[in-house]
Length: 344
Ligand code: SF4
Picture 1: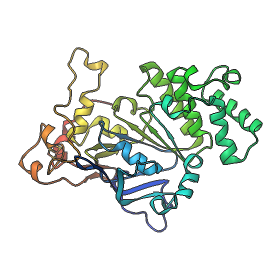
Picture 2: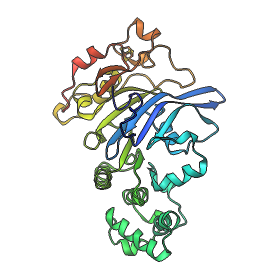
Picture 3: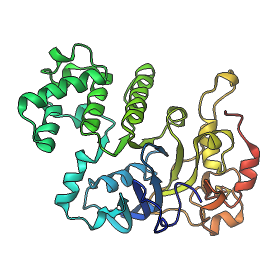
Picture 4: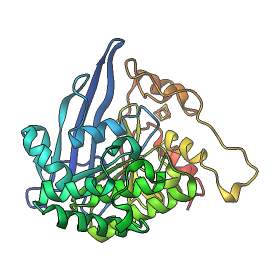
């Protein structure tokens, strides 16, 4: 059994921080019903990081939006499943209670800080609002906390810059401000959706390091959503790889890098530049992700898979148990696993 696919907790075990169970989400579009999330299960424990990896349209962000309660409904609709936070199913909570949880106990870092931040409010006011609304602090106390937080996330001259507006900061600094806002109330869970995609490589590493450092200090559970396997190696404990709305591989991070148990994961690893393989060409994954209104029968990856055989076109693979911590939704996971990668 894996972190991404486990049965319900035993009556004596403490409930995990986040426990997503068999979640299904559809979008009703003019072209038909898009099956965006098709039976996703994963868990996040306090203080641990789960990276959810996949191409655009794999369902990773839609799952996160469902967890946070910010799915666009309609056209989106959660058709079945459970999202348990500290053991309580969020899908049965009244919207008012979910709103209270957001910010205070669950927070999100978005990809594009410029559109997520309010352009007509100073960053200080936006951070301070978290403390006035959720903690009942006075404006003065809240402003002081905002300065402290800006210092903590590495904004130089925070006391002066607290009055500035989002457009007056660089992309990296804005992302730091978003992280400050997400962690302001020391939530138990943070979901970071492609938090560094819009930044250049050096700044990406700094922002990721900051996120990992604060997460460790606050013992926060972190769901890190990314399309880039390269950014998660040093920060994640466990990886769930998504394809066509399903988790196709779930494994501890180092096991997955060393030897993937799914051809799609292998293809993702082969597309990462490696210093020890200078001069060798990178492999792009052939073909395109499937249309979610017409997901191929059998294994959804079969039109792109170099190992595909007849059974792959007819029988959908379950998430096979590779060992107690790993799962792979590939009929031929043993062969794939034996291939290794040489990534350490
Ligand atoms: Fe490839 Fe078949 Fe495995 Fe799917 S089940 S990943 S098509 S080998």
